[in-house]
Length: 222
Image 1 (cartoon, one colour):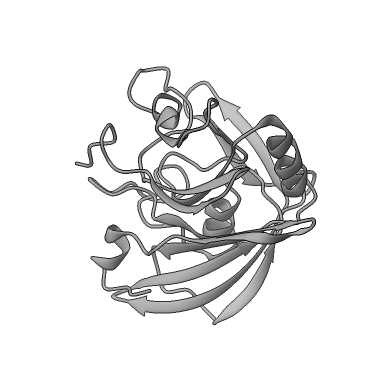
Image 2 (image 1 turned 135 degrees about the vertical axis):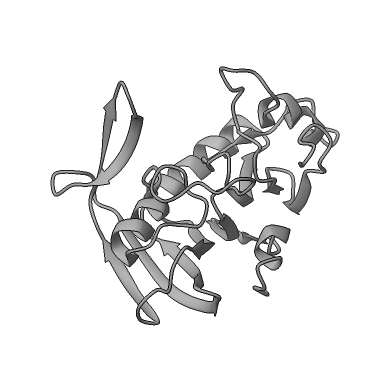
């Protein structure tokens, strides 16, 4: 099991206003109610000479690994948050789909809505009256009944890729305990592989996170 207290927070991009780290799978951004380590407890490691700890600009699920943007001061946080809201940020994810996906590429347009119950907790579902959600996808590789898919979301809805995989491709992400089948010792296999953020008067922020070990062990290669 990965030691999330000491796993290095690899830096993929750094300048005076922003950092992009390769977030380890299993590390939540906020302190869990049940206790345990989170990025909140470790973000001081990323000060790198600044007086203030950087703050995450967007969200990644606890299981999701890869590119996470952090702002090093409040002005940058406000500016980058606005870029995400305006859909100006390029996001690329890799996911291992638990099945043989039909076709080579396509676009999924399924509105999403949140539901909850006392027994099962909350989850997102496709719903005509939900919020618009659009994901482009293409197959990268196929291995032993699994499919490595590249996802490029236009919108940033909660659990968007996970629901679009299950409902739009007909197969959930491998290890997804909510929309697919939970496997012992396996996380939901989703990885934020690339992030690109445009900036006025500066080169864009571009970061790429290498394929994680649990993808490689299945025989997939970057």
